[in-house]
Image (cartoon, rainbow over all chains, first blue to last red; front, top):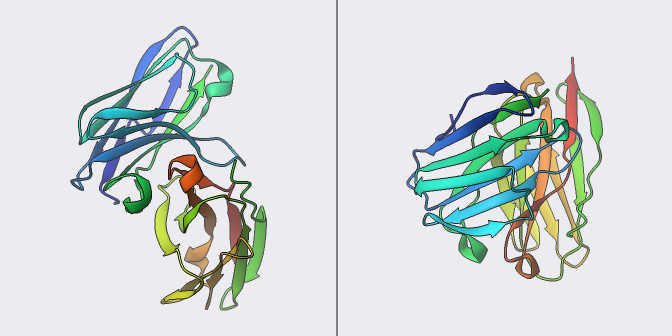
Length: 115
Length: 111
């Protein structure tokens, strides 16, 4: 248990569906992240929120829409995805960003399959 | 990018030692992290190096040479539970201090 909880753990969705991934951190951190992990590839940073404000959108397609209502919760809204979007989506949190940021704590991820 | 390279796979015997190398290229190095990720689980933080030298933490040690753009993670007295993927990540000033990850090294420990 890392203090970062993601739901659901597994998700299968069609290309026309709309779904949301949820992340909650119980560590009192002020920064939250979404990463994409594909097989045999490095983790790809998608979005960064610092004190609820989005500070990074790493050229992510608009079919992925993040939402951060407060420092403890992060959502990733999905719509009209493509099969190549199938991957493990990891949420993480840290205390601060930048050079003084602590190490990131990761959730267990949502295994997404787009059919 | 930060061009982080690490071997794809390594196999070792229980009780042995394994060294996982990581090389990187940055223009504003600001720290290197190692994470462990068991299949189907969250990556968990193992170590952090920002200065040259060896950091020891129980059976695990991490080494950094900034001039060579090189780090290694040393796993001693290997146990079956050490079978996992090990991720090297670098923080870079020129990348707004964001973490860039290597693709990970899958270590298999055999009896």
